[in-house]
Each structure stands twice: as structure tokens, then as C-alpha cells.
Image (cartoon, rainbow, N blue to C red; front, side):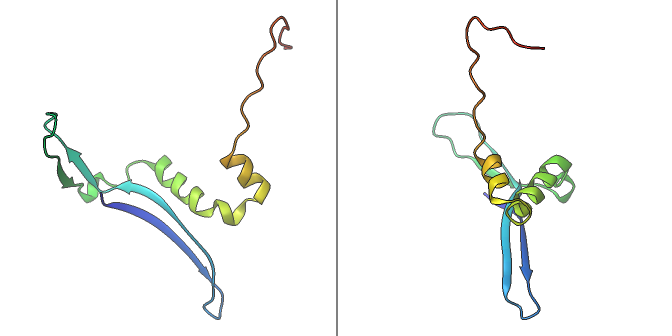
Amino acid sequence: MRAVSLQLKMHNTDDVELYKATAGIQLIEKVSSSGAYGSANSRSALTPTQLFKDPTRDATAVNVALRTLVLTPEELDALLNPKPPEPEQKGKKKRK
């Protein structure tokens, strides 16, 4: 499947690469199938007017590509490895 990705690169004045990150944005093909078992799938390209219609998806790609640059290691770890919620103890009432 073909897709569009956002790639960010940062270089210093000596052209030394300081930062590089890539984040996927959107598939640029759609797959169609007749639904029959073992049938062949067909791919068709999306038109330019069908691309980048979801600002939330675009913003997510930018956030993913920049997060290792702007977040502390602790913030990045918390984002990528969220702690599960504490289980409620039986017989205790929640405080309001």
C-alpha cells in the first residue's frame, strides 16, 4: 500500500543532521474486494481532493514526528506507556 508520510529533518549550519523523525499521515490507495474467499483485491489511487480531509489525523502526524524533540524522556515514556487505572476496591465509596 502506498502512503503519504511526514518527515522532519533538522540540520545545523555545517549540515550535520541533528534530528530526523517520520510519521504516517494517510494511505493514498484504497483496496476493494468482491468479498469472496480467495478473490483478488484491486487497488485504486485516491484523488488529490480525497487527501488531507482530516485535520485531526494531520495534527497527530505532526505531534508524533515532533514529540521526541519537544518532550522530556519522562513525558515521552508516560505518553507511550500509560499506567493502567487503579482498580476500585470493593466496599469503599468514591469521594466526590
